[in-house]
Image (cartoon, rainbow, N blue to C red; front, side):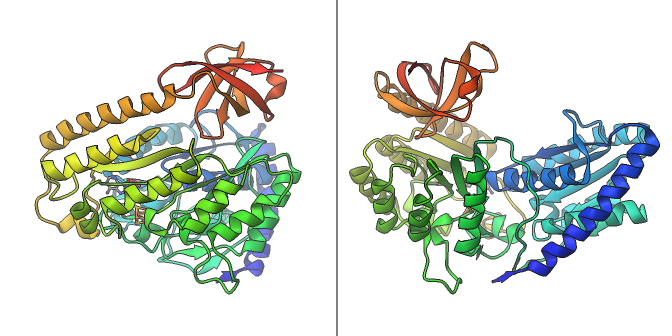
Length: 469
Ligand code: 5AD
Ligand code: SF4
């Protein structure tokens, strides 16, 4: 693996150049330059957007609430087709802003840009887009932005893959008290429906010392809760020279005093070790929540999905986890309508949902992604069959989730206060270790603190509570 310090330096040189360009420009037009970043998709993209914001803030742009700004960037997702359609739809609106503000720079980045067909379409139909880059070279953002301003031409820079990890560029966090941290990039699993390995490249882990250093710096800056991010965190460490795996990394992070809560996502069931379960069980800081994508409850479909576990493997893993961490919240992802899914296969999925009792589940309609093995499989399922299954699954998921949520009423939990409730300013909103949201009366000075809250009422998928002083 290649941690590239020279590259970090180079990008800081561009940041310096951009600072003076932005200063001159705002002087000329008599106001500060504004930017807006829109994030589509997952937590990895959310974290990447914090990096974009960090750079834009450093060079002197001011964040704007709306997209009628001087620099607008969409950090895109392509995991399902409708994510792509949303971006095309919104580009039309951006064009109308750009016609009124000739200085406006429009940029696109993220997973969708790693697809050739997308680049083709943008070149043909959206030539007003100024800058396009992908997932592998996001660290080059300062250089690319400089080039756009300098050349006034459309710049497209997409890399096929990379082995580089460029550290220590600026970031701007959404919350002062919690932060995501990439521990690895890419994915080697090639689930047959999934486009991620093609657009995010091969798996590469960051060095443990870089991760620990970043977490220590964050904690000095007031961060109490961290979320370790990767497409498959359970295979962390493969390919590194150090003797490290995910369970060991967690133990090391657990030893950092000022970090009070540790979360992570996503876990692949095939790689979740007993060592990890033990580390989770023995730590007070590692949250009682595991996102464990099931995808399907049918062993046959799982095999076609290339998931490397059976229905029974999944259920026995859940038993092993619950035996050691009784109150853990399990959440999951499920795909409905994978090619060849029969009614019996679907009922196996319902059976797992019933047996496990997930706290919540993201349910997705299978989306055909060009280039993935599943796209050319026979027996694609018709829309009306999928819709019927999707509705039945959702109903069961909600019923089971509600039952799990109800069980906690009357108990007391540690809650990290996140914000003042958006609808009722007398209430604070926070998250329990199991990731559930609770609203309770309190003073906004408590934002960022961990407080004790007794759960009074369950409102479906959130709670109303009362704080203990
Ligand atoms: N269609 C539907 N859902 C998908 N996911 C990934 N690829 C597809 C697809 N082609 C879902 C999986 C994954 C989540 C992030 O997105 O459930 O866990
Ligand atoms: Fe996609 Fe599977 Fe990798 Fe998750 S583990 S990103 S579903 S290929």
